[in-house]
Length: 338
Image 1 (cartoon, rainbow, N blue to C red):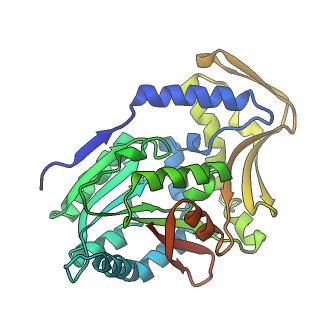
Image 2: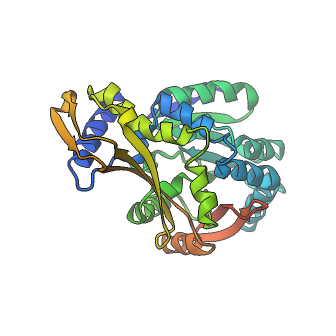
């Protein structure tokens, strides 16, 4: 196969400009907030990877279980529905898989292996904001999948969905890990509409979503005994210190979680333990924190069964199937573009 194609939709200057904008807007708002995406520098990504293996953090464990148990069922749906559209292959039409926020593309490999074994996998495209991660994944997978096309997209999947490849094959866009729940309600709706516009009828969307359950189980996942979530949450302050020459003292912020039962959402916050003035020299901004003041650092929406299907239908998708783990903690939803 030829060398993997790399589509660069943004570079370091774009990331720097976005960081400056997000920091200034969020820290001058009331209440103060920072977007969840700012947690994920190299250190943050490593902390999150460590978090996914903590006993309390069920979402990744449950999603791995679902994919391991149902990869063949997912492949069968793709094959059956593709053939119903007029394709003659007994194994279904070739499928191009695009993974949003791919990171190391670990969990999706069981599905890629199944599609590849059945002759259905045409190409795989990790889509991530970090160019080094995309290059690393492509280098690793080139030895694993020698007979398929590999490519990567370096970009923000809330801005650059028009760069999703189109080689006139059926496409499966995968959005794993429950990241969909980190969007606000308006952001979820806009993302789904943008994705629908970027795809063709007959393409597929596979999205992982955390389900509503006992709040004690949910909150335990964000307050693990090892303190990994707390350190991950405070990492956003390290990012601002490193990238914007700020002088936050992360140890003087307490990791706080809040369960909003009405919105079925976990909110992540950092609470100031003493009065502080923080200077962000790179953007010439000074910010005051009162003792007990909370900086909002992210959300994680939990979905009732049927709730996500309604949102998918409203955006132009036809829900096809939902698979859950044995505890019904997490769901993997497959929908087709109408």
